[in-house]
Amino acid sequence: MREPSISRGPVVPEHGTRSGFPRVGVLGGGQLGRMLGLAALRLGLQVRFHREPQSGGGPTDGVGEAMTGAMDDADALRRFVTGCDVITLENEWLPLDVLAQQLPPGVALWPSPDTMALVRDKIVQKQHALAHGLPVGPHRACESEAALRRAARELGYPVVVKRPRHSYDGYGNATAHDEAELLAAYDRLGGDDGRVLVEAFVGFVRELAVMVARRPGGQDVVYPVVTTVQREHRCAAVEVPAAIDPAVAAAATALGRRTAQAYGCVGVVGVEMFECPDGRLLLNELAPRPHTTGHYTIEACVTSQFENHLRAVLDWPLGDASLVRPAAVMVNVLGTRHGEASAATLPAALAEPAVAVHVYGKRMVRPGRKMGHVTALGESVEDARARALRVAERLEL
Image 1 (cartoon, one colour):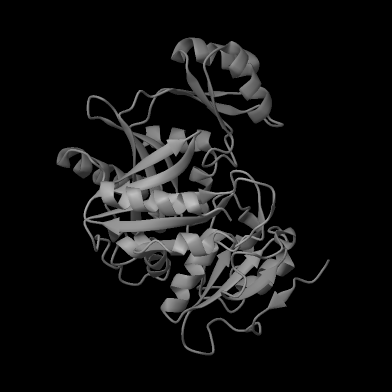
Image 2 (tube, one colour; image 1 turned 180 degrees about the horizontal axis):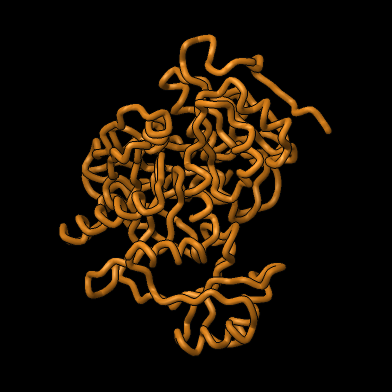
């Protein structure tokens, strides 16, 4: 078995760290890991990343200690967890069985394997929501074309077809308006086991999201309710505060809290929901980790989602989640071409005052790939939106 490669510092053989500051282990090395690492460094924490060998570095390069190895390689994972005080992760589809067996006594993994088992499969996620009385839209779990056709008849077109696993932010989702589109979506998303989740298309007023940071004992803080702007099932922008009735905002906050509790989340969890024309809220999906809809918090809130995630998994007091300005807008910057990433347009983007630009450090660009984001603060959403969009349009990485 190939030895995992290590960079940036020695492996500490005993539990705990020589410096007296905790070492946080992060499974993954993408942009969420990068922003977690930067928040950890701000607090004086040490951070170690475990990345797949084929990832080739990128976003987390230079942020902390890096180790590489397969996510099911027991030896590599044992080396990774040795010397860490807590382990967390940047996506919910990582295989955790082998990792959990390697954890030394006293080293926690958050979110827990139990939470991950309830969230990583969207069919299981929906079933758990129903069992706990959380409001969800009509849906069916299907394992064959016959079941798929029956679900479409019962739910009525259009329907949304989702791959149960590895389906996120536009990947693994499709909207079907007729049987031809339904079967095409099934061919693409059914996978080896033929399982898909079919949901009735919800006629919503807007899509909302709430970030909740929660400690192991249940103490939590909730960030302001945001509106998410979606294009082709993907989050294009986030606007805060959401332009909603105070009663709806209170209900969204309560639903976020109930959801985090129902799934036993520790750390930050992103809870996405639909606001219906009659004011009802329906739970859409959740992600038990820092989330795109919370990136605005880096500049816009007293404590970012990334810092509060670290505080939560370390079981430290949570920070203030309130806004520092009346409004903020975050716009994702996606790739538009194939090739090597370039900073050629970065100076033009930076010429706009009072807009924060985040570049994720990905070496290669392809259409639709998340390459960065920009955040503008302002006295109104309209003001912040105009400036954020101007900068995002200039930035072609």
